[in-house]
Amino acid sequence: MRKLMLLSIITLVLVSCQNDKYHKISGKVTDFNGHPLDSVTIRLKNKAFENMYETLSDEEGNYELTVKEDDYYCLYAIKLSEYRVNKLEYWTWNVPVYKDIIINPQYDRLEIYGINVFEPQVTPQETYMVYIRPMSLTKTLQFASEQKLNTEAFKSAKQAEELLNHSDKLINISPDRVFSEELEININGIKSEVLEIHKITEYARGFKMNGFIIQILKPDDSQNTDLKYDFISVKLHSKELNEIGKGEAFVRRIK
Image 1 (tube, rainbow, N blue to C red):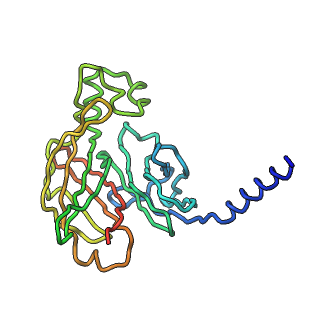
Image 2 (image 1 turned 30 degrees about the vertical axis):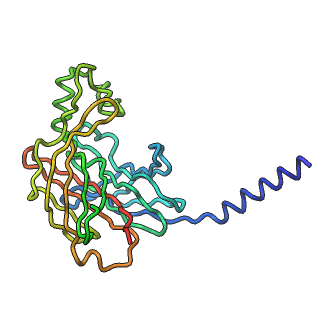
Image 3 (image 1 turned 90 degrees about the horizontal axis):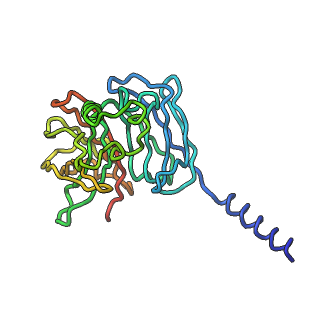
């Protein structure tokens, strides 16, 4: 009886595996001059921030992941030897893998982190509110110096708040201001107009960080499609810091 039950369980697992669907995430990692970046680590994560899939870009900057059909929390890219040395990271959020998709990471000294997108409850639904938390390498290095951190402690800290002493509450590593002319925001590859920019303070694990809510107008051409998701790309070139970064996110369309 026990052998029969075990055989039944194995059979169910095998049938389940055979029914799983897999798709490819692929793309090319480049700098902001279009030069390919090799040996960049690309990781696909779940909401617990566990690495589900991982690969490296080749000499031409190309990468490919074959992953199980599902919703994933984020994809990130960085050459690990560069992190917090001369570069920060690239992120794409809310990755829906139900067909083959292309994501082309770009990164430099400005990390566009924590992108969230929502649609205001106003008709017609012609705008998105896009939240970003930009993080500057220049200000991060300055912050580490002010905290009198040794190099190893700085490189090994997984979260920025691990670097703080308990007397500090604000992790001030964002640009002080963001202007519309510094932003390039595309929806499905089509440039969107920036309408409003508001700086806010975000609570995070006992500390505070600065972020920005940006209202953008949906281009008419970006809506003439049967896509279930909009792909929003945010590039910021901070004149204040002379740093550039890009982050992206998928947002499910509300029909």
